[in-house]
Every structure is written in structure tokens, then in C-alpha cells.
Image 1 (spheres, rainbow, N blue to C red):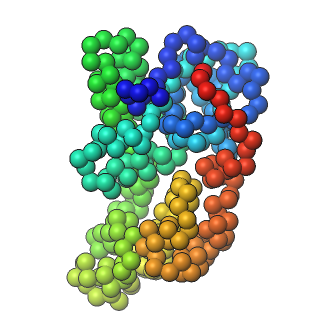
Image 2: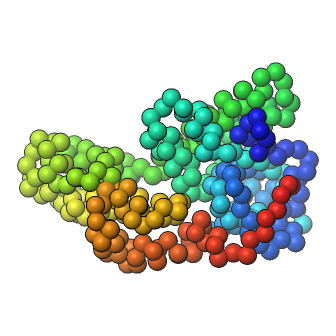
Image 3: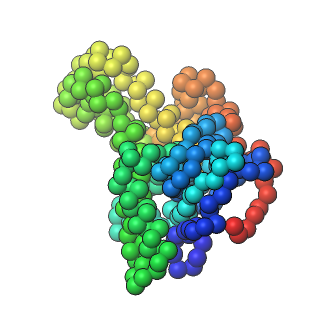
Length: 298
């Protein structure tokens, strides 16, 4: 990564090629990888998924995500790429923001790989292509403009990911205000160690028994069950994307007792947190199983 920027573009004729020819392995990068296919077709292979690509395909791959690109045999594809040191970049652009907001942004950006069709997401692709041109032609203030465009791009990635993660709108509309507000409160406050039914009822100024009853009626789940689902979901993300100890993760998601965390996790996932962390589809942890060669340059 250059010293004066968080951005590394790979542009030009070199990236018109038959991708995957003679390559039978996956690779990964230490930075967020963004790719744009102008022309061509083939497949993007991740650890556990394969996506077809074509003209005007956008890919967004978190760091440490094993992958490879394979053109349709005997055809050329024209790609350009951008690598972003997203952790330091986000810290820089959100230096005056609440630290939790920066963390939320990074979590959304790195949530999972995205393979998008440009016709469905024209705004984010427009940001990227303008950024490519700024870095390509390097007119006055190109670096400052590129950083601005990269900021817009990352915020739009987070917005897309957030929209994908939302509860289905139709299901939301079926919930009463009490239940929907309770769901939102849990999702925003699952890390509070004193979060329980009594606290949730107090927030809505109704009795705990009434809140239990209407929540079960509308969602089919007990309130405590839903709290555990949200916490365990966040635990899975941290197990997949961080090297935090299981005890630290338990504490961060609201459990005061690691034994309670382990029991609830196993009830929901049928395996212990340690076993889940070692599952093949957790790509950050799976890297430990690969024979890894360090390559520098392009």
C-alpha cells in the first residue's frame, strides 16, 4: 500500500487476460478487494460458493477471503481492481464519529463477499468508475477526490449490506409496534449484561407477562430465545472474523458467564463455539489449514 493513501488501484491493459489459466488454487489479500468486470464472463470461486460473472459485474471481497477468478476457457476478461486498507481508512474518515459507528461500518463492509450486477446497483458502480478515472489520470487533487469517492463507495456498501440484512419488510409489517420496537431494541442492545424481559417491558411501559405473551404470539418465539439468537448470531460473526478468545466474545455480547454462553450457543448451533470456529466455511480461520505462500507484487 502506498505511504500517502489507503488506496491501491490496479488499472489498464495488464488486467485484460484469461483469468485462472494454469491456476488451480485460491488466494487471498490483506486488504478489501473491489473488482469491476467491464467485459468477459466466467466464475468467481470462493471457499464454499461459486458465482457467475459477466459484463458489468462488481465484486467486493473482505480481506483474508480465499478466492479465485476463472474466465470461460479461451476467452479474455477485462477487470480493474481497487484495494483498500479499510480499517485505517475508516478510522481516518470517522475520526470525529462515535467509535461504535466506525466499528458498525467495518462490520457491514466485511460481513461477507458481495457479487453484484451493475444494472441493479448503478450508484456504487458509478462511484467506483469515477474513482478509477481519478487514479488513472491523476489531475489536480486526484487523491483527495479519490478518498472522497472511496468514502462514498464504502458507505454505500454498508447501506447495501444493511438492507440485505434487514428483516423481511412484509414480516415487519405484521408485528405490532410493541413487538417491532422490542426487536429493534434487542438488536441494538444485545451486549448489555442486564438485558432481560423486565428491562424490555420497562422500556415499553407494559408488564413483563404481557410483553412475553404478545412477543410469543406474533413471532412464535420466546423473548429469551430471541435474545439468545441475536447474541449467538453476533458471536458467530466475531468467531469468524476475529481472534478474540471465546471468553472475551461471551462478555462482549452480553453474557456474564462463559458456561451460559457455551450452553446457549450449543443449543442453537448444535456445536460448541470452538467447534463452530473451526468449521470449513469460516474463511478467516480456514486459512490456518492452507499451505500459504507469501507473494509480493503483481
